[in-house]
Image: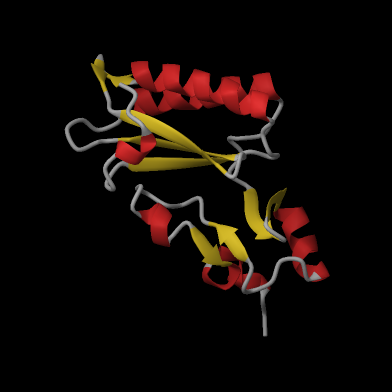
Length: 162
């Protein structure tokens, strides 16, 4: 059952999906409709789960589920991946590829694959203090203090050899 994101508990499990580009206002409306409908019906073994989503920076989808009474099963997680895959196809974006890195440059989100990220680092656009998105957060609470971190505190630190 859909619950507004701000009402989800801090312990809600989250999954981060980085779009390869920013969504248009019409696309945000479409994503909102589709994910609200999906969350309203999202279930595990026939039992509805309290679920929600947020679209951050007009580009990043955060899917959340409150597992306090009922955990997400493999089948329910698969159904969420199918919903995201449908969005990918309809919007012609890449959401499910985990090989992307997003960071903030001049107030804008920049997303690229590993090859592009290496080029950004070599060009000086992505530095140790650059804010990067950590897609490995586990719960809503982590979004406050572990989602946006300096590149030096992420797995990218290996590229900043001193």
